Length: 128
Image (cartoon, rainbow, N blue to C red):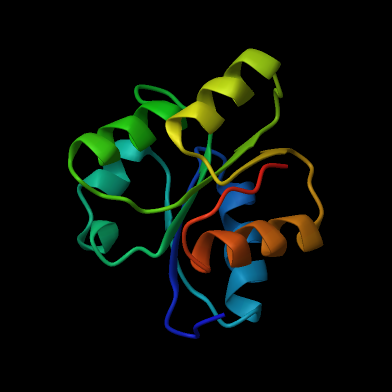
């Protein structure tokens, strides 16, 4: 892991943002949290982000729509999706769009860190 890795966590649930922020900060990552995809897209961290961890289902713009929008803008930032409502069709759509991992909440710390390390290590595909 590079200590300079910047992770953006996007979830409309403040408790998920806080818990993920605390976990990743304790592991040495620089973490920014956002309550919506729009908030992230308007942020200065958009270009500096090494990996995005986002909820799938959010108001206005879903996590998958955010990924596709970022790709349209030319950003190749790796994405990790998390959801409280795992669904095979949504999982397949996320992975086809380029997600590194698709995690069902609640997920273990080990699995999230493993996904993050895979995402930050460069190209390759790991799916959970």
